[in-house]
Length: 79
Image (cartoon, helix red, strand yellow):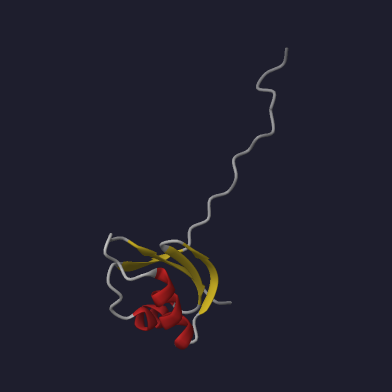
């Protein structure tokens, strides 16, 4: 199973995300989802970091998942 990694821009003068995506595709990294200033990638985090290279203003982070809140009502005590 491959890991999922998020890369995101942190600076106003960061390289454009289209340029970063092109660089990653050239290195064989799979892009799962692309949003402005953020990419969700699949692959080895170290390989992604090397493929990202010295892209100005971009950082690598792990994917985090947040479960949805429980919305089912529960009876706390008997009436």
